[in-house]
Image (cartoon, protein in one colour):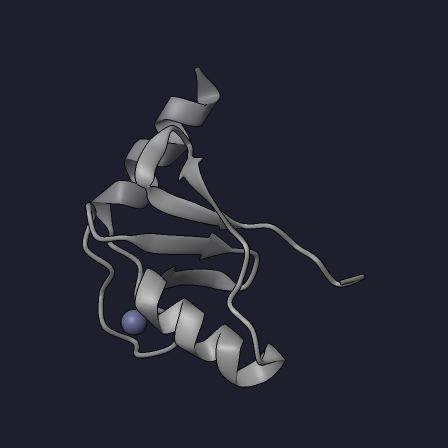
Length: 76
Ligand SMILES: [Zn+2]
């Protein structure tokens, strides 16, 4: 499947965290947002600083339990 190929490529080059710029380890808790990949802790800290509340995260991005997707809640 196409999706499996894409995942494999993105896993090989660990992406830098969008906040602290350290590489996000393959199995580290991480948030995959439209703006990039973040350590989960980094994303929560950033989000809380901006919105004053914790982000709503959905586990299981691409079937990986340590990867989280952001549930956008702009209307909230
Ligand atoms: Zn980070």
